Image 1 (cartoon, rainbow, N blue to C red):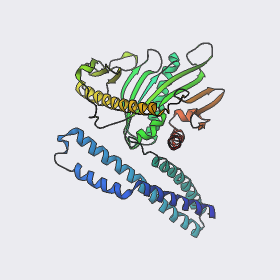
Image 2 (cartoon, rainbow, N blue to C red):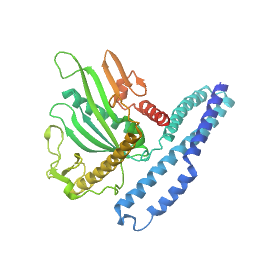
Image 3 (cartoon, rainbow, N blue to C red):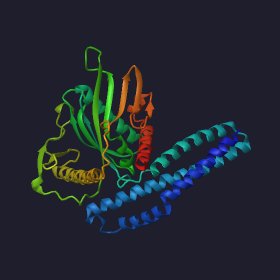
Image 4 (cartoon, rainbow, N blue to C red):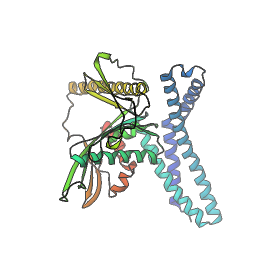
Length: 369
């Protein structure tokens, strides 16, 4: 029979949901959705593709957010009905089902609570993630490919659409680098806590002496901006190279020079794009990403200058954020939050929600200190 603890937990969920709904301001979201729907229905919407993209993206993100919140509210209502029926009919199977749904709802509520902490300027946007191999030879390039699969599986588990924009394959195992887009509300806010250096320690599968090998990979996360018009890029500041897209082993997957590499000469930033079918499309996508990175670089430089003037610059232990141990102890440990998992295979298969939630809470606390 369902006990007092069950009812108390349901009340706690209901109370937490009410707090989240108030912070989120569902009525405001509904008004924004109505306004964006009206704009999306305008006959000349796609006369300006950039503006149209901004409208449709904003609409889909808000609709997804409201749908998620109202789905949770509906599940709470259904749980209360199920629990009542289970007690009245003394049905053990229904009681078991109610307990299972209660646990699932508590997990969903934790996810919603974490999302309310995402209040940064770009947190609600989609994300562009770049993974680069670091020191460690073949182990590092292999590790970079493992991380790429890990994040793509995490996105798949969360029903977040992804698109790989560019991949540079290593001569041996794995990849030198890869860039992909995660097109979902709050993808940047969630994945931004994954940015930094990741360290892998294992018995190398590429060596003959069964020695432990340490390798590194870097993860960069930036928000996907529909327009980055605040940054003007003179043509004289960029160099554009075109080449053929290629896959593993150098096998050509395109018979024309459609891939584009843009180098921003003053900053040294290099953007490669080969996902689109034409050179024009790849160039446009690369320029948008370059504008975004320059805009963020500009903001970072301004923030760093303010900290310097305030005398608040402090030393830190690099930017290494997480270690993955695959020898002896099987462990993945985040060095900032202390969150860990003894199941690295599950983590590499996309089980990242615990690490991301811990990272968001840690960031929220450090901001408030």
